[in-house]
Image (cartoon, rainbow, N blue to C red; front, side):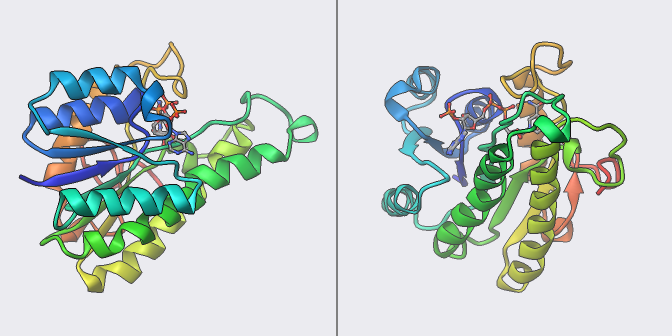
Length: 237
Ligand SMILES: NC(=O)c1ccc[n+]([C@@H]2O[C@H](COP(=O)([O-])OP(=O)(O)OC[C@H]3O[C@@H](n4cnc5c(N)ncnc54)[C@H](OP(=O)(O)O)[C@@H]3O)[C@@H](O)[C@H]2O)c1
C-alpha cells in the first residue's frame, strides 16, 4: 500500500484528497494544524477503511511541529511514497491597491505557501528517500503564472505561488539525482474558502483528478507545472 502525507487536511482540497486517495487504497497521513478542531477530517478518518486515514498534527510554519510529525510518520511507514504540499493561505482581501495593501500579507503568504513547503519537504526528505519512487506534489495555482498575469489583483497570493513554482523547479533539479520527483500542480478553480462560492469545481471533482494525476506521475514529469489532469503546457509558468 503506497503512503502519502498531505498537509492542510482540515478542510477544502486537502480533506477531499485524503478521502479520495484513501478510497483508492492509499495509506493517508493527513496533516492538520489543529487536529482536535478538524471535525470533518475526524469524520473522514472514522468513515474510511480502518487505518487508511491517520491524522497528524502539522503546522507548516513550525519547525517543532513538522519535526514531531516526521517522527510520528516514521513510526507508521518505513518510507513515504508521496508528499502533497497542499496547505495554503490567501491572506489579503484580493482587490486592494498596492498603496493600501498591508505588507504583512506578503509575509503571511510567503511563510505558508513558500517557506512552509521548503520546511516540510526538507524535513520529510529522509523518509521520502526511503521509498522506491518518491514524489513531491506542490499544490500551486494559475495565480502564480507570471506569463498569464494580466490583472492587478491578488498581489501576495500570486507572488507566493510564483515563488512556489520557482521553488518547485529548483527542488526538482536538486532532488532528481536523488530519485525524488518534484512537480507543481494546479487543482483548478475550486469551491473552498480560498476559491470562494463561484468556483466551478467541487472539492470532490478536483480531488478525483488530482488523485489520478498523482498515481500517474513518473520521473519524466520532474520540474513540470501540471494541470489537475496531469497535462503539461496547459498551466503556463
Ligand atoms: N480553491 C481554489 O480554487 C484553489 C486554486 C488554486 C490553488 N489552490 C491551492 O489549493 C490548496 C488548498 O486550498 P483550498 O482551496 O482547499 O483552501 P482552504 O479550504 O482554505 O484550505 C486550506 C488548508 O490549509 C491549511 N493551512 C493553512 N495554514 C496552515 C499551516 N500553517 N499549517 C498547516 N495547514 C495550514 C488550512 O488549515 P486550517 O483549517 O487549520 O486553517 C486548510 O486545511 C492551497 O495551496 C491553495 O493555494 C486552491
